[in-house]
Length: 325
Figure 1 (cartoon, one colour):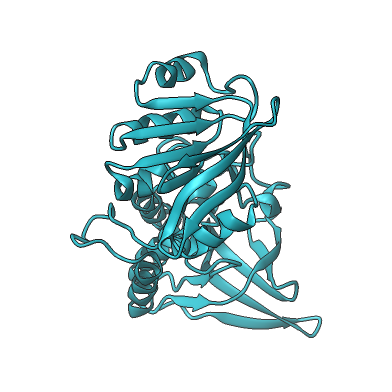
Figure 2 (tube, one colour):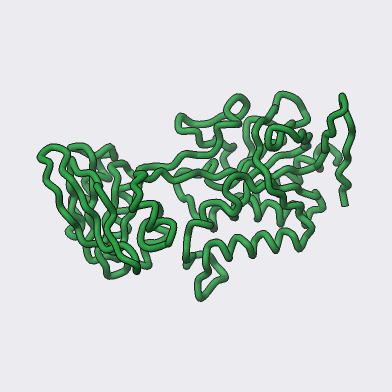
């Protein structure tokens, strides 16, 4: 197994490793599992949210291999344990600075510790945008009816009434998805028109059980000890306040990829999602690979993140082999 080498430069200790994985979640932990089995001795830093977005999800019902479903945090603990079983080095810490200008990739942990890595897998994910309402955050934290992913959590509201906030293509897609399993879907659109493409807007407008309320904002998410029971809305033109019954409150106003620190070196789209070479996890920097939601603005599922984590580890292994490591 590759041994981690420590040298002292100007009295500061620098750690040299073969493979550094930045971020946990399904992508990071899967990359760690594959990299460990390939004797790459990976080091994984978990970042600000160990376990990623799934740690805020109470039930995961659509990940293969869990016929009875699994609690999100429990699933992340199992993935971490599996990575550790193959001797992956899982650490607490946050990458605060990077330098990808040379053949050796440099990173700094918590503003202090310096690491030189032959390969890096970026698995920093993306953070869902929320409205910021106290009531919204309350029910999000207790897993009581607030979600930012209809495809992930919509099944739990089958045959029930739901509300979704948003005006873009993603909001329209999620509203249409919910309309297939829920009795009624109410869309809250802040302006007097959609931001979505015309075809997506027409699709929801023509769906019988979707009600669209334009010029409408959320004042409060209503509920009790068992979870969400409704949404209090206000028309920003007339001032009319209305309570809408629902058991599921979905927020589809976008995501922020957690990639800011890499912007000086890594090619991204206008939103900040990392651009990878099609069919691979390669970025524009040799030896730096990306997996999970940091590059995926379309699917954002645990299973697709895990798949790209596997790809990134395999690509990193091939890169090292070509260098003779």
